[in-house]
Image (cartoon, rainbow, N blue to C red; front, side):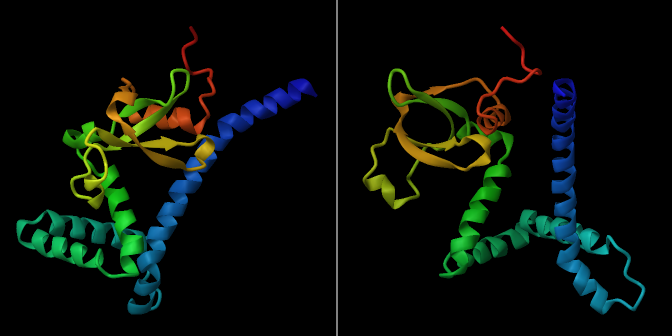
Length: 200
């Protein structure tokens, strides 16, 4: 039984990442398909709709909006629309955080220095791994009450349970030469060593 249990666990470890990856991708495609799929079914002649049209229409819309945002003429218009959305009482609660999150993932290589892996030393014997998310508070009202040497560091929690952000002194932070993806992977797994990691 112990041998069978070991084989089952090995198979489970190999199966779950593949299955979950396929599920997430399939769910994403399904959401994109349904965004315009129902609308296209109503406007197209009966029998003319082919599964996948909704997904393709969503991709086309994203590319079209990307073209408009990058276009010199229409970029100013979209910027003003985004600013107005941030002022609408109910919409700004959802729109502003989502917009900031998407901007975080969409940063170019020249902006990646604003998001780096660090060790935050709370005491001489206690440190946590985090990501620098902000090094300046000039655009916030907090700049009047925060010391100039403070930075914002996001501390991810293990097993995908979320995280929290701390404002710490720069002197309490030590830069770590590690890719952001590796740091998030360590946090997600609780720093458990796997067989793929080199053993010292």
